[in-house]
Image 1 (spheres, rainbow, N blue to C red):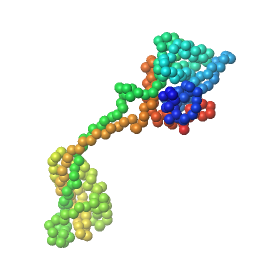
Image 2: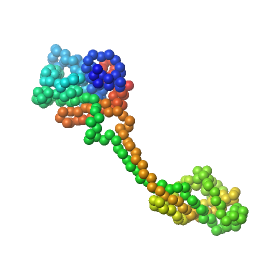
Image 3: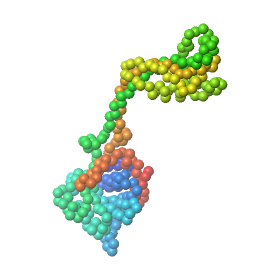
Image 4: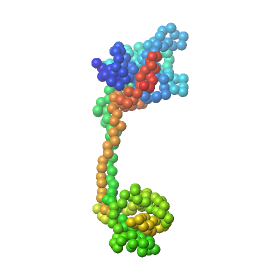
Length: 299
């Protein structure tokens, strides 16, 4: 079974179709992926203006917003396409007179086929299964190395307002200092009347994050508030003017890998004239299906 058939069964729908049809429908989806606003129809019979003969066309594209028609012939061949295929397609193109004509195949074209297509202004493209070697020259993964300086939990000693010295002594019950761990999200600064104003975290974090850091060294210093802030020390409201601080810094290095978003590269579309080259991923294919008229539509 053709690899194209397997891709169609897995990512579009598993159904019985005659040889080559699944490749045609995959190609139709690919052209819908290239320009989602276009109307892409699989398997139409068309005749030229004033002509009696109807031609079976694998893919017809009606360009969005303009009166432009593109005809596409598809060949899922194990060998290169020869001149006879291009000549036969040219017969239909000559009568229908589309704005653009394209032949798409899996293995390429003979020299005679290429020359004839060039003479008749028919574009040639290869749509085949994506291979691992196709990643050469493309970005498959981006490795991002991040270096940053982190610090441990800062040690903070509040600088109390001299006007509250006596109240502080009473609150400390004869102790020189008050040492305790504080949850910065659950403890508050207050105003002079004892109304909660803001958490420790909302006030202290922006200040501390702005301090200079040196890897492997202790950072110490003093920071003074613009105005007195109040805290409770053993249920006594005490004014603070700022704080002394110290913390250690250390360097951390990590590498992140950004890939193609977890997508699987399934197909590669490449024009012989190098005008376009596109990698088609599983997510590109699996989002589309066909209505009863053969028009590509979103699932």
